[in-house]
Image (cartoon, rainbow, N blue to C red; front, side, top):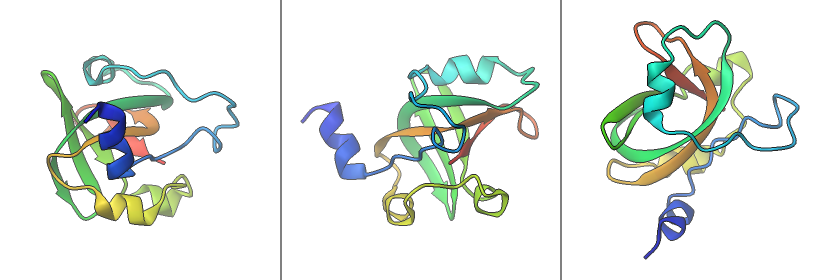
Length: 116
């Protein structure tokens, strides 16, 4: 079974492109690249892929190779940023490989992604 099949089974696309008025989706970038950019002045659109290592309510941690990142789907409904599929979000479990689109943000102590 290939990666694409796993993503389709996970049904875990969290999309922000429409909110930002963009026609094209962000390029897929390594999680390590987002984490290394600790001096984020303005949130910017990203797309990452990784394995879910932890999940509680609307918070998810994913990892790819040696880097992991917090996916914040908790605060985005209140901000109006969330455009994702609630059923897809609920189906996400540890061990699943997913792709996430959102806004890279400075976060409280390290960069995170605001899921959209």
